Length: 225
Image (cartoon, rainbow, N blue to C red; front, top):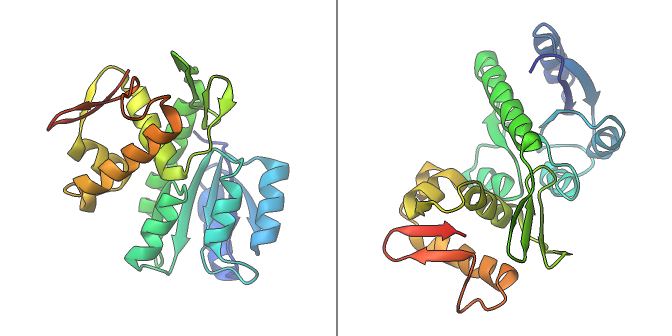
């Protein structure tokens, strides 16, 4: 998706310059921000196709900027940070980051991840609302409604229900769901998955103890109907 507009939120002049040169040489439009506050303002005014966000910003944590943006911005956000601690990576992904790349980074890998994220955003934008019974899932705006009322979900809860909804009627295994939503390192954490499914049922089902939408396939996984 060339000619896409990418906003870079990073306080390091050298990184901004490198990214600007790299992205513009690949036909992307580039907008730059040095602080979290400036970045949020530019997202609101430019609505870029993708955001590259550093976590170590001078005015506020990139984690907080990410959470602020995810209140209303539904396109891809790639974290690019020197922070490589597993807890930071998990926190960012749980808060809605599309991808996470650590500095120093390889230019080719960053470009590949940008292309992949833009493809996902484009596919999501083209999908219609999914309506089943009293539930409506808008995959382009990341909004879930029950009986017309918006249900507030965390980023991880939304990612889980969206994955199930996109595969409506299919049984998705525990391992597949854990890998796709949380990553390769979580494929055996079935208890973790059960907790999130229980949370979703409380929010989405009229009777969580007798679910009509999020159905358990005993010993295998879950199915959305």
